[in-house]
Length: 84
Picture 1 (tube, rainbow, N blue to C red):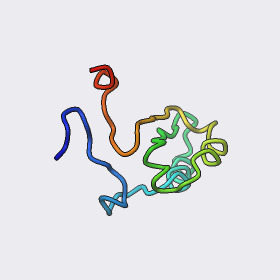
Picture 2 (cartoon, one colour):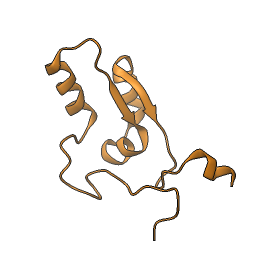
Picture 3 (cartoon, rainbow, N blue to C red):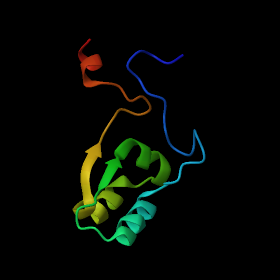
């Protein structure tokens, strides 16, 4: 049963069929678009599950990351619920 304020995981291990499956694929699409105003929104939790070594990936892709999301594994919850 899902707790109030949580979200189900959204990665291909739990829910196959997403168009984007990894950092390299997203960066290839950004390169193909060719805009200097298009960046990556990086979900640390999901990329840890999908790719493993997020430290190396973040180090390599940091200039192209505009936002990073960090949540407890395995549950994503609003910050206010941590102080409840």
